[in-house]
Length: 83
Image (cartoon, rainbow, N blue to C red; front, side):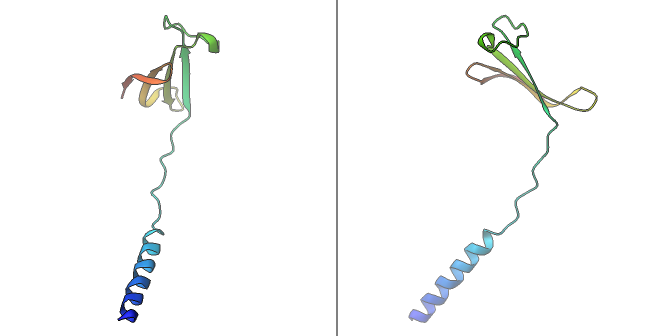
């Protein structure tokens, strides 16, 4: 009886270890992100004290946006996005 329980316990440990060895899916590589900062009037700014909004877009080699363009406001909550 104890042999059967120990055998079942051993098989359980081996199966859990085998499931843990599954390969992870390949990560999607995104083009570099372009972040533009805006003040309260949606004018571009580089001064950190004036930043109220940020727009994050990924761009291809020709400079066109790729994927989703997202706008955030302080404290970096999503305002808007366009696919």
